[in-house]
Length: 271
Image (tube, rainbow, N blue to C red):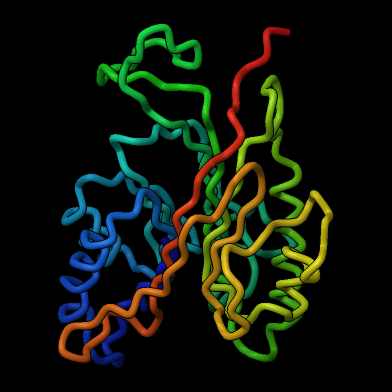
C-alpha cells in the first residue's frame, strides 16, 4: 500500500482527530503487509503505530529526526525482519538529511527486508533461529518510499529526483552471492502523472525493455500515487481504495493497494 496521509494541518477539514480512526480502520480492513506513507507528522505516525501494533515502523522526518513530515515504511512484524535501512535526500547532497530547499525538502526512506518463516523440515533456505523463535530465509527484497516536489515550478526537481532514485536502485548490490536479483518496490506520491518526464526516467516508454528501469503496477494516466517494481515479480491485483465514512474521507489521497507475487526463488550460491 502507498498512502499519503495528509499532514495534520489546523486549516484542513476534516481534522486529524476526525480522520485518524478512519485511517486505522482502513488499514485494518485491507491488512497490507507493507505500507509506504507520505506527509505524516510525528503525532500521526505515533498514533498509527500505537493503534496498529502488528507493524514495525521505520523512517524519519524530512529535516532529520522527528521534525516535519515523515517518510515512513510500515511492515508486518510477524512476516519480515529488517536487514538494512537508509534514508537519502532528494537534493544535490543526498547524504545530508534535511538538505535541499529550506521549505518542503524531500527525501527517500528505503529498507531491505527478509521474510520470516516458521521452521520447515529440511528447508535449505532457512537461517538459524532468531530471538523470537522464528526462522529467516534467503528471500529478501527492497522497499523504497518517497514524496516528490509539488507544483509546476518543481518540474526539474521531480526529474532530478527520478534520476537520483533510479541511480540508487541500480547501485544496490541486488545479486551479490545470490542466484537471482532481489526485487525492488517503490511507493510514493510522485506529484506527476504517467507519461511525464520524471515518470519516463523511472519506467521509460510503454514498450521499454531496459533492465535498469522499473515497471508500473497499473496503467492509469491520471494517478500521481504509484507503486513501481522491478525483479522477478508478478502483479496479481491492483485497487484504488475508495474508503469513506458517510462521505468523509480520511485523506485527500486515496491509497493504492497492489498484491504481488515474487516469482524468482532467491537462494545463496554455493560458490
